[in-house]
Length: 260
Length: 249
Image 1: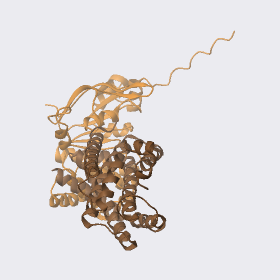
Image 2 (image 1 turned 60 degrees about the vertical axis):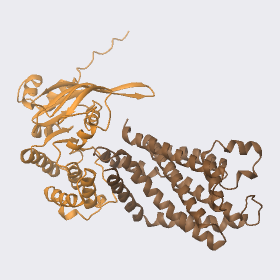
Image 3 (image 1 turned 120 degrees about the vertical axis):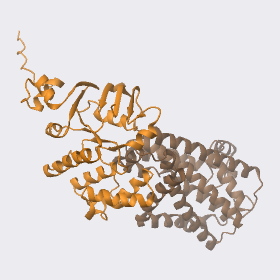
Image 4 (image 1 turned 45 degrees about the vertical axis):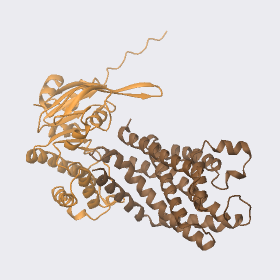
């Protein structure tokens, strides 16, 4: 029984220059406890898909359920069971780390006492304890990202959506974050759906990859299955596999135009 | 649930206001400057109505300051939107109405406090008005702030940058202020201007408030004022909540 399933999930934006089909029809299933990597070129529809699955954006077509809650008929149920960490995070620079954590717990309807306890617990888990009384503007990039993720975990969600969680982080912070994601799955059975442009990240972290291009799923499978099928061998790099799937391989030089 | 959520959001933004001491100081100072530099111009003018010029000036001044203050309330949310704070909140189960009301009630509380200070200063300068009338005046000021702040947040959620927000709000508030008789009563205006001013909801609020300040509570102006103020607030909160529910496109 999948924890996330979507059928033909689609979103068309109305713009001044006509409708733009950001997502044309995504069919996706995610098993409980799976770490799923969502890959695709810029503008492929990854973020739009996550924003639909987290109820931020209403789909214009298709259907989806998240942890047993229907996206269209029970958005409140979806919000209770999933956490979302956006690309840009979402903290007020003037507010202290502690206040953000407690407020987040309260937004998820914890009592004041529960929210305070949960804030301490999250700070311990994400190595933020010494930073609780700092303003968020005083955090480093890696610390900021850990806070963003702590906010997404305030209510112990069954499903966590991470949009480019390691963009802009140094290698050590990225490795820490990978450990954290694995730990979430191993210790709490959390299902994680993450988007990334780093193919080494997808390779190291994801159990399964879904590659999106032009608003549809163009390939999916374990990293090694994809390499074998599209890259020619399991030794192929994910980079070559990705380029082969999305058709963005360097084109052979066009023949010089005949001169008359 | 709604109460708890609203209290949570209200608290968060009240702390935000308390952090910016400069804005607080300026917010209190500005109305006093108006009283000090504009009030004396009117003391000997025949403004019509039953009371002194202060009873005409102070209600208009309160509504005018409320109008400008609340209309620009949305500025803050544009900054927050860019930080991702609004989406972070919208992804939680928190009530959408509370996301709006918590902010709007903060704006209202802050402005009512400013209004109290302004009235106290006006009393020192010569305003004499019945206490009940003054209290009714605060209720009108609160309703106006709720309405305009809600609409301001709704607009701010829809626009992408402060560069579009500022001019749009200015373009809407300036004519509203002039056409409502907030500075001087419309009873002084030529017929066409007086007639035109009746399409402005604030016209009804200021007429009712001026009645309250001279102690006439059972008038037609008062009835229209209450009706318009309540209807406007209801409409604005509905529009604002809708935007918090659907925004994102």
